Length: 478
Image (cartoon, rainbow, N blue to C red):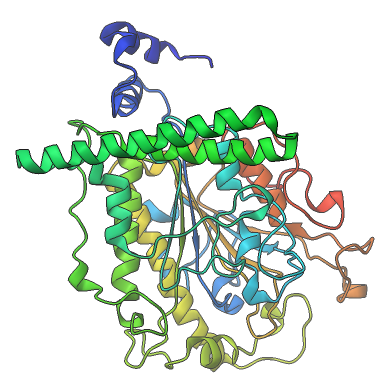
């Protein structure tokens, strides 16, 4: 890999023998940033349920690509209506997931660009965060290669998570902020108590011994296996390398202050349908704080956050107890919200309900932006926020809400709104994917663009019926 002059200067100054020390990369990055060099990109994907009320998400009368209003009544994007945040967002209308599954089973398509398998449980290929972090080794130098966080449930079927390994194998997601903190930060927040330090060292030594034992078994077995089985064992070795990084002690750099351990009393219950719902807001905020600090400390550069809804009596938005049945399913869209199939004028009362929940979801994206900005890494981060549906009453995976945020190291032109061309011509509003006249802007094109922003030479991504749906970048981003 080519090393920049600033980094070469740093290595000469401190000596290459220190390169294996914990947080060496953070110090190297700090030196490079001070010299005017761009830091490596971070990537976080945030999911919110229930699609959108297009009437209050989409461009309003008089809006242009660069001049647009976010402050109107019921605007779901009002949280971004400050000069600092508005200049760091790119709102895109008309992105299609084109999942073959029920809309509620489609979160697994957001980062994979994939159809869902016949069982309805998993996509057909890995998610982009994993391709970048593991296959392209962009997370190899960090203590945690990537982290998958969630709110409310530990399910890993395609509708319940975002991160998937080779063949669509789901990564487990963490819903407890305390557990997430321990994974990200516990190894370098060592107690001053000498007995506790000794216990921690014994734990690390034992962990290293177990890893060495398992690795030895795998290496002895590898030559006896056929290529497919060797590939599976390679995946196990990758997992072991991640474990090995996690048990290594970490020193605290002067440029990085670990966050306070989350207060578990603020979320005594975690699980959906088991009393956890009233604590989902606090859990979401805790996860956001951890992601921001992990990015700032360069503990990891890749994260996903699967957010939940607020389905409980007395929720802070004043929404019905059942957000799913009484908000998402009752949405009655205008022609703007009917995914290209205009039927009737719709019901504004239902738009306002859904937009209120949408506004809550985007306020969390804005919160992450604010924290990243305070910590000095917003310019080096790409946030991709989306949902599994456009119109939730139709379970449609067309025209899904898409917001890119952050500085993206200047790779995309931010501070804009983009509206993709209609999927179908006016002469055939009901055309389907695969038809000659269908011109859908799939999120596959967006995923290709993101990969290229990370410096990866990739021109196709995901699994769709025809190559035109998976190949090439999304127009208008740069």
